[in-house]
Length: 169
Image (cartoon, rainbow, N blue to C red; front, top):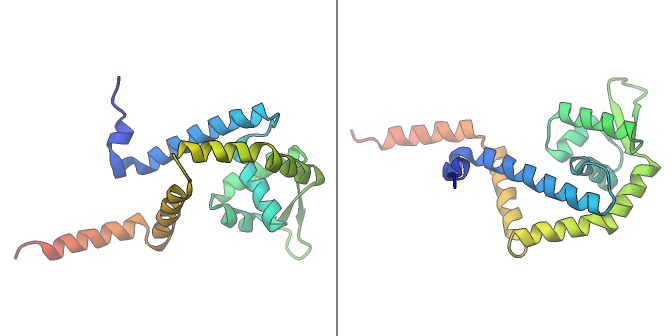
């Protein structure tokens, strides 16, 4: 068996490892969604869930709510609009700003998957986390907050400075 280099690199490749894990989770969640007769990609549901929870949002607000890039959200919204699950409208005062909202079809889809598919996906992921998912989710939240407070560049500068201060005279 070949060594899992990404795993062995530890913190050095944590981003790659988390991305790899995210891709695996999305692929497997997609299989569960398809089993529940949901044909929409799993990656689309965070946008739909945000709109269902928060109501109509502009693209910037949606980007902030999801913590992802604006170009990615814009591409995803175009697909969701083509599917008839969201609608966009330009604000009268500023044509550059679009407000996005769920359509009736989008609300119906969210209602259905919340009853049928999401509980199964959530339970299966929690089971894969060996026990209640809360400790893992708390660790991820703490990591996200720590990186928001002080990005890696700032941390690296501080660590270099601390190394320089502790060098023997």
